[in-house]
Length: 235
View 1: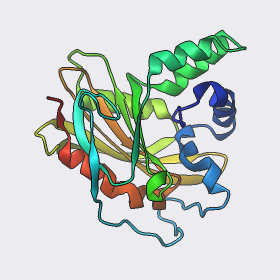
View 2: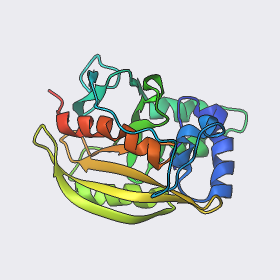
View 3: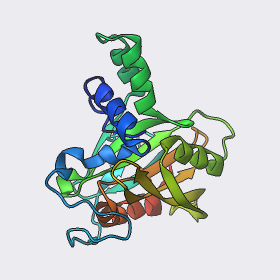
């Protein structure tokens, strides 16, 4: 389950209601507000005609003092805005809300997917797109990148046509990548999503690209490729 987590306490109940109605892939909330005036595209369907443009580097995240401190570091696209997610603090705040344990449980569901926890959200909207590049991290150990990625995808729900393959980042980290379709049973629409995972001494890292629809996903794909191409262990 994936939604914008910057205000978990205020949106948790709404997100769970959406989950109950839509089934899997609540991560499609990447652009709920904009979708009312946008053109939703199914996988293989026609969108509004916008295409991906070359990605200009806009900075780097992951190192100490950057927008998000992570076990890895990589470049982000120009105008994209990175914001760290303190999952522990968000869960704590939610658990102290008016509905107590319920809010805490909902926050945990929103902030965790399979074996990893939300750590950083890189917003494409300042660059004119509708979606996010999200980074999820796990606990240090001997976790296999492929196993972590499969659990991550399985926990999302409503997914199909997964295609896994090995990848090597520009920084020499070997990992596993997946491309898959995410389907809303109610709307009958599918959209493309992509993610890759690597293992690090600081724990597994998953980088995921969603988007409002397949058109937005494809338009943002160069930013995802930039992250993969430049990702390396944090020094």
